[in-house]
Length: 193
Image 1: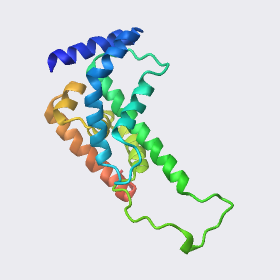
Image 2: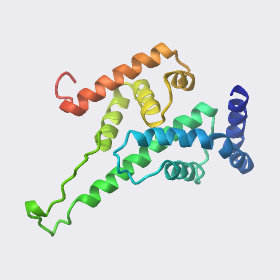
Image 3: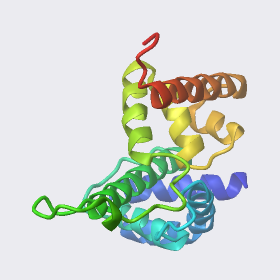
């Protein structure tokens, strides 16, 4: 694992310097793990989600290989960026889905014309994204921990390695972030914020 990690880190740094061959060698090293993380993330989404893990990973990869050159530091940096991209893709997807459900402004619907949602999503991804942005302004590290755990699918030990902090700190930040986000999302944060 350590050898694979150092190989991936070396390829990332070379890619950051513009070596497209290194970029192409990197994908097979990280693809399986990215797909597992995407599958884990999508298990948390509503049951009828139209994105599949493979499509999510491919979208992340397409955004990563875009025109922007990233000065990659190491494998952990790569997975932090990938987790953030998964979050953005899922939020964009949720926004598009929500916008598609709205009737055009010129059309008025009678109550019995409206579709009934039988299985609402377990979490409002847009509200989570908004609250996570708010948390990031108050406590950036707690927001990073939440993003890596929830959107990146990393374990506490992996988050500790990626952020170079202790596992105990990750556990504490994870609990704090979840409690703060729960409060923010259920009450709108009107009490005690």
